[in-house]
Image (cartoon, rainbow, N blue to C red):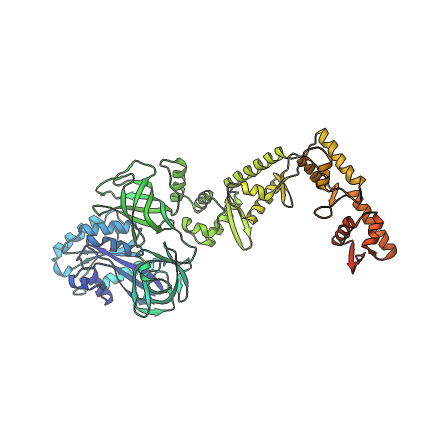
Length: 636
């Protein structure tokens, strides 16, 4: 079944609730004060099925009084199609116009106009009201909408109204049931024996009993205990339905109207967001820099100030890029509609769309920022993904982009494949996870690596290279160890660097010795060659030669790097010729005798236990020999 939300709109006492009662048989005025005063104060909810078409219309009945527009806005965010109600005895009124403006600002595109109370007026008057209504609807999304005369008392026109609603609903796409859960809450209360209950329109995804979720912006963990859809207990609720949810692990006092129930890690709270704002043509006043406003996003209202990014003043009918600086945290997503009302007097003056749901503070009239916002507003998905990735201070995972881009993880992955092919972004793979880096950032990181190595090579010209992790610690960007290794491998493929185990160097770097350094290096090598099976240690070399210890160490490392000296253990190194001789003597002895003891090998080399035991262990590790008890034999 297709699930859609129908929302009423219109001036106070124009018969919205009576009309809904006639359509559904349900009275949406649930508060005692509403029933006593005969006006709607808060949101009312019911539903009816278009059975022959397999469509269920959930209905949100909003209050019409100007004092309760805040409540109207709380329900309007989930509306798929509108039922604008105009009383035939009064015609188009101030709240009719304000509600219509709000629906337009929220992006509602389909609807029907009901001319109510036709049983109370003459035909001639009704025709005048029709013409006036059409004039007021000119240029709006309801300009071509059907105008249906109805009476909530006699039932006149009800069948025609249902037919018009059915025709529109048949052509509408339902909300996405396969997306992540997005469930704005417009009511919360407590029921004895059950605990906390919340209601709202499930805007995306599916909810099931036992699901874990997060209440945003406070990031409170909750569990779904029970679900109700229009008074019926269900095991699963889907996008497009009005849902009542019994929650565990949260107190009713910790939930406010406008909070969002969503899956973990899919949303983020913010007090800063960049938007495109439109001031209504009939707004009473212009908007000035840093003006305090009421900001309605989803079902939530918060106070905040505006920083106008590309103008000094926004005049009625104009648009501008604006940063909303909120006084408390909210949750937003890309392209989400919002409405603004003046702080005082409280009147709707404009609205717009969220371009960047989370951002830092900006300076005004920044051309780079304005270009980015224009891409967010008008660019393709590829352009928007690229520009968002470019601003991240660490690598970006597809799920990190959902809020700013407004696509699913799979859609983002597909787009990123194309950006990788175009060399716009660089892809990292860690197990089953992928992350991305913009190539501008990649180039900056490459420059940082090159500069760090150049400086190191200048300072330590005798050393082959520098420890990878030392270079990583100097980068002005956060890369995990796995990402860093992939980044270095890419630089090696480019021919920029060479990698040797834990060290890296610039490809162009070559070790060049002065005459004095060359002479000292040869003397060090001679020490190992001449002392063959009882070689010197590094501290002994540093003590023997009256030069800087660091120079001895560098030349020693150079001999190791070039393979002239071979590491036996942490303290003992042999000249490669000596090591070869030690290996051949050992193999010859074993070929003749079959086995050898430590003492026999010591005598064979005319050395000491200090050197021969590590040497035998070394040959064991190299697969030359195998230890059996206290003897060695040739390994097979």
